[in-house]
Image (cartoon, rainbow, N blue to C red; front, side):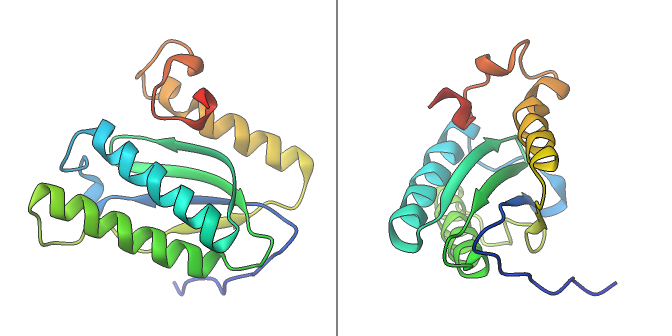
Length: 144
């Protein structure tokens, strides 16, 4: 099945998901992956005007709720995925792919859908039994 054509939006937010290769856990501690990813997200905010609404890092994937006032999600994600892959692979001395493929995205066109995705993202660690309350999960922008 072909990848859907990218829909660049300057007004609607996106839900973005990317999984590690073969759904394996990240090769370095999640706390280190969190630091790398947050730093790269901050870089994308500064350089490409990414607006992050929610971000949660799990042991083998992440969820990002964001919008791009310049309609450049494709450019942002290409840089983000590349840089996080380089930095994580360098720290772990791996030479293979970190990501299992391209990121997946969905355009959010209603307020109801937005709130459903927002809740889903932050409840992901709770559903995986990684915490008892969403506020306790350390690798989430809910803490910030």
